[in-house]
Amino acid sequence: QKEVEQDPGPLSVPEGAIVSLNCTYSNSAFQYFMWYRQYSRKGPELLMYTYSSGNKEDGRFTAQVDKSSKYISLFIRDSQPSDSATYLCAMRGAGGGNKLTFGTGTQLKVEL
Amino acid sequence: EAQVTQNPRYLITVTGKKLTVTCSQNMNHEYMSWYRQDPGLGLRQIYYSMNVEVTDKGDVPEGYKVSRKEKRNFPLILESPSPNQTSLYFCASSPRDSLAQPQHFGDGTRLSIL
Image (cartoon, each protein chain N blue to C red):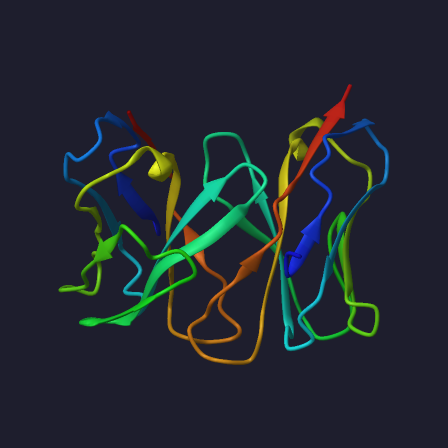
Protein backbone atom coordinates (compact mmCIF):
# COMPACT_ATOMS: atom_id res chain seq x y z
CA GLN A 1 0.00 0.00 0.00
CA LYS A 2 1.30 3.43 -0.91
CA GLU A 3 1.92 5.97 1.82
CA VAL A 4 -0.08 8.56 -0.11
CA GLU A 5 -3.12 7.73 -2.23
CA GLN A 6 -4.55 10.10 -4.79
CA ASP A 7 -7.26 9.50 -7.38
CA PRO A 8 -5.57 9.90 -10.79
CA GLY A 9 -8.68 11.15 -12.56
CA PRO A 10 -8.99 12.49 -15.15
CA LEU A 11 -11.49 14.93 -13.72
CA SER A 12 -13.41 17.10 -16.16
CA VAL A 13 -15.53 20.03 -14.96
CA PRO A 14 -17.24 23.03 -16.59
CA GLU A 15 -15.79 26.48 -16.17
CA GLY A 16 -16.94 28.10 -12.92
CA ALA A 17 -17.38 24.81 -11.06
CA ILE A 18 -16.01 24.11 -7.62
CA VAL A 19 -13.34 21.44 -7.78
CA SER A 20 -12.42 19.15 -4.91
CA LEU A 21 -9.13 17.24 -5.03
CA ASN A 22 -8.18 14.81 -2.29
CA CYS A 23 -5.40 12.69 -0.87
CA THR A 24 -5.30 10.15 1.90
CA TYR A 25 -2.18 9.03 3.69
CA SER A 26 -1.11 6.38 6.13
CA ASN A 27 1.97 7.82 7.84
CA SER A 28 0.93 9.64 11.01
CA ALA A 29 4.35 11.33 11.14
CA PHE A 30 3.46 13.62 8.24
CA GLN A 31 3.02 17.16 9.49
CA TYR A 32 3.57 19.40 6.47
CA PHE A 33 1.23 19.23 3.53
CA MET A 34 1.61 20.76 0.11
CA TRP A 35 -0.24 20.96 -3.16
CA TYR A 36 1.68 21.35 -6.39
CA ARG A 37 0.33 22.17 -9.82
CA GLN A 38 2.04 20.68 -12.85
CA TYR A 39 1.33 21.86 -16.37
CA SER A 40 2.20 19.66 -19.31
CA ARG A 41 5.96 19.61 -20.04
CA LYS A 42 6.72 21.67 -16.94
CA GLY A 43 7.97 20.98 -13.43
CA PRO A 44 5.68 21.05 -10.40
CA GLU A 45 5.10 24.47 -8.85
CA LEU A 46 4.01 25.01 -5.28
CA LEU A 47 0.39 26.09 -4.95
CA MET A 48 -0.49 25.75 -1.28
CA TYR A 49 1.37 24.82 1.87
CA THR A 50 -0.14 24.00 5.28
CA TYR A 51 1.11 22.77 8.60
CA SER A 52 -0.85 20.25 10.66
CA SER A 53 -4.66 20.31 10.71
CA GLY A 54 -6.79 23.21 9.60
CA ASN A 55 -7.69 25.34 6.60
CA LYS A 56 -5.70 27.78 4.52
CA GLU A 57 -7.12 30.04 1.86
CA ASP A 58 -5.35 31.81 -0.98
CA GLY A 59 -7.58 33.49 -3.54
CA ARG A 60 -9.67 30.83 -5.26
CA PHE A 61 -7.78 28.01 -3.56
CA THR A 62 -8.44 26.47 -0.15
CA ALA A 63 -6.37 23.69 1.40
CA GLN A 64 -7.78 21.57 4.20
CA VAL A 65 -5.97 19.08 6.40
CA ASP A 66 -7.69 16.61 8.71
CA LYS A 67 -4.92 14.75 10.51
CA SER A 68 -7.35 12.65 12.55
CA SER A 69 -8.70 11.16 9.30
CA LYS A 70 -5.36 11.36 7.46
CA TYR A 71 -7.11 13.24 4.67
CA ILE A 72 -6.21 16.41 2.83
CA SER A 73 -8.17 18.38 0.26
CA LEU A 74 -7.68 21.19 -2.20
CA PHE A 75 -10.73 23.19 -3.28
CA ILE A 76 -10.71 25.40 -6.35
CA ARG A 77 -13.55 27.90 -6.60
CA ASP A 78 -14.73 29.44 -9.87
CA SER A 79 -12.49 27.10 -11.84
CA GLN A 80 -10.94 28.45 -15.04
CA PRO A 81 -9.56 26.71 -18.14
CA SER A 82 -6.11 27.89 -16.98
CA ASP A 83 -6.54 25.62 -13.94
CA SER A 84 -6.33 22.60 -16.26
CA ALA A 85 -3.25 20.74 -15.02
CA THR A 86 -2.19 17.82 -12.89
CA TYR A 87 -2.40 18.47 -9.15
CA LEU A 88 0.01 16.66 -6.88
CA CYS A 89 -0.29 16.41 -3.14
CA ALA A 90 2.93 16.09 -1.16
CA MET A 91 3.76 15.74 2.47
CA ARG A 92 6.65 15.36 4.84
CA GLY A 93 7.40 14.72 8.47
CA ALA A 94 9.38 16.79 10.91
CA GLY A 95 12.61 14.91 10.33
CA GLY A 96 15.58 15.99 8.28
CA GLY A 97 16.31 15.53 4.60
CA ASN A 98 13.46 17.67 3.30
CA LYS A 99 12.10 14.51 1.70
CA LEU A 100 8.65 14.89 0.22
CA THR A 101 6.31 11.96 -0.37
CA PHE A 102 4.07 12.63 -3.35
CA GLY A 103 0.72 11.38 -4.46
CA THR A 104 0.49 10.20 -8.06
CA GLY A 105 -1.41 13.31 -9.14
CA THR A 106 -4.95 14.09 -10.33
CA GLN A 107 -5.39 15.32 -13.87
CA LEU A 108 -7.93 18.16 -14.04
CA LYS A 109 -9.54 19.62 -17.15
CA VAL A 110 -11.73 22.69 -16.93
CA GLU A 111 -13.85 23.06 -20.02
CA LEU A 112 -15.43 26.18 -21.51
CA GLU B 1 15.02 35.19 -12.64
CA ALA B 2 15.20 32.49 -9.96
CA GLN B 3 15.27 29.11 -11.61
CA VAL B 4 16.42 25.51 -11.68
CA THR B 5 17.85 24.60 -15.09
CA GLN B 6 18.16 21.05 -16.37
CA ASN B 7 19.93 19.85 -19.49
CA PRO B 8 19.20 18.15 -21.75
CA ARG B 9 15.41 18.42 -21.80
CA TYR B 10 15.08 15.34 -23.98
CA LEU B 11 17.46 12.47 -24.66
CA ILE B 12 17.15 9.17 -26.47
CA THR B 13 20.09 6.85 -25.99
CA VAL B 14 21.02 3.18 -25.84
CA THR B 15 21.60 0.72 -23.04
CA GLY B 16 25.02 0.99 -21.44
CA LYS B 17 26.06 4.36 -22.78
CA LYS B 18 27.00 6.59 -19.85
CA LEU B 19 25.09 9.84 -19.62
CA THR B 20 24.91 12.86 -17.35
CA VAL B 21 21.95 15.13 -16.75
CA THR B 22 23.01 18.51 -15.42
CA CYS B 23 21.11 20.62 -12.90
CA SER B 24 21.97 24.16 -11.93
CA GLN B 25 20.19 26.61 -9.61
CA ASN B 26 20.81 30.34 -9.26
CA MET B 27 19.17 30.84 -5.86
CA ASN B 28 22.14 29.90 -3.65
CA HIS B 29 20.13 27.00 -2.22
CA GLU B 30 21.84 24.49 0.06
CA TYR B 31 19.44 21.63 -0.58
CA MET B 32 19.10 19.91 -3.96
CA SER B 33 17.48 16.66 -5.00
CA TRP B 34 16.60 14.48 -7.96
CA TYR B 35 13.24 12.82 -8.60
CA ARG B 36 11.89 10.55 -11.27
CA GLN B 37 8.25 10.63 -12.30
CA ASP B 38 6.55 7.54 -13.69
CA PRO B 39 2.87 6.94 -14.52
CA GLY B 40 1.02 5.47 -11.56
CA LEU B 41 4.03 5.88 -9.28
CA GLY B 42 4.27 9.63 -8.95
CA LEU B 43 7.45 11.46 -8.04
CA ARG B 44 10.07 9.40 -6.24
CA GLN B 45 13.28 10.77 -4.80
CA ILE B 46 16.52 9.35 -6.22
CA TYR B 47 19.24 11.26 -4.34
CA TYR B 48 19.49 14.44 -2.36
CA SER B 49 22.22 16.77 -1.15
CA MET B 50 22.01 18.96 1.91
CA ASN B 51 25.12 20.93 1.03
CA VAL B 52 28.37 20.82 -0.93
CA GLU B 53 30.07 17.42 -0.71
CA VAL B 54 27.09 15.97 1.24
CA THR B 55 24.85 13.55 -0.65
CA ASP B 56 22.51 10.75 0.39
CA LYS B 57 20.23 8.15 -1.13
CA GLY B 58 16.55 8.68 -1.60
CA ASP B 59 13.95 5.99 -2.26
CA VAL B 60 15.20 4.71 -5.63
CA PRO B 61 18.97 5.27 -5.90
CA GLU B 62 19.94 2.05 -7.71
CA GLY B 63 21.69 2.69 -11.01
CA TYR B 64 22.32 6.38 -10.35
CA LYS B 65 25.18 8.49 -9.04
CA VAL B 66 25.36 12.13 -8.06
CA SER B 67 28.00 14.63 -7.04
CA ARG B 68 27.88 18.02 -5.37
CA LYS B 69 31.21 19.77 -5.89
CA GLU B 70 29.67 23.23 -6.12
CA LYS B 71 26.64 24.67 -4.42
CA ARG B 72 24.81 25.55 -7.62
CA ASN B 73 25.29 22.26 -9.51
CA PHE B 74 23.97 18.77 -8.84
CA PRO B 75 24.48 16.43 -11.83
CA LEU B 76 22.76 13.06 -12.12
CA ILE B 77 24.92 10.33 -13.63
CA LEU B 78 23.74 7.09 -15.20
CA GLU B 79 26.91 5.02 -15.59
CA SER B 80 25.26 2.14 -17.48
CA PRO B 81 21.69 3.14 -18.36
CA SER B 82 19.05 0.44 -18.76
CA PRO B 83 15.53 0.58 -20.24
CA ASN B 84 13.92 0.62 -16.76
CA GLN B 85 15.51 4.06 -16.27
CA THR B 86 13.36 5.48 -19.03
CA SER B 87 11.48 8.19 -17.17
CA LEU B 88 10.88 11.89 -16.63
CA TYR B 89 13.47 13.35 -14.26
CA PHE B 90 13.20 16.48 -12.14
CA CYS B 91 15.81 18.37 -10.19
CA ALA B 92 14.66 20.46 -7.23
CA SER B 93 16.27 22.89 -4.80
CA SER B 94 15.41 24.56 -1.49
CA PRO B 95 17.16 27.22 0.61
CA ARG B 96 17.98 24.74 3.42
CA ASP B 97 16.51 21.83 5.25
CA SER B 98 13.78 24.10 6.52
CA LEU B 99 10.30 22.84 7.11
CA ALA B 100 8.89 26.12 5.87
CA GLN B 101 10.61 26.06 2.52
CA PRO B 102 9.06 24.45 -0.54
CA GLN B 103 11.09 22.88 -3.26
CA HIS B 104 11.64 24.64 -6.58
CA PHE B 105 11.58 22.30 -9.54
CA GLY B 106 13.21 22.39 -12.94
CA ASP B 107 11.15 21.70 -16.06
CA GLY B 108 12.26 18.11 -16.36
CA THR B 109 14.41 15.85 -18.54
CA ARG B 110 12.72 13.10 -20.50
CA LEU B 111 15.08 10.16 -20.92
CA SER B 112 14.42 7.22 -23.21
CA ILE B 113 16.82 4.28 -22.93
CA LEU B 114 16.53 1.83 -25.83
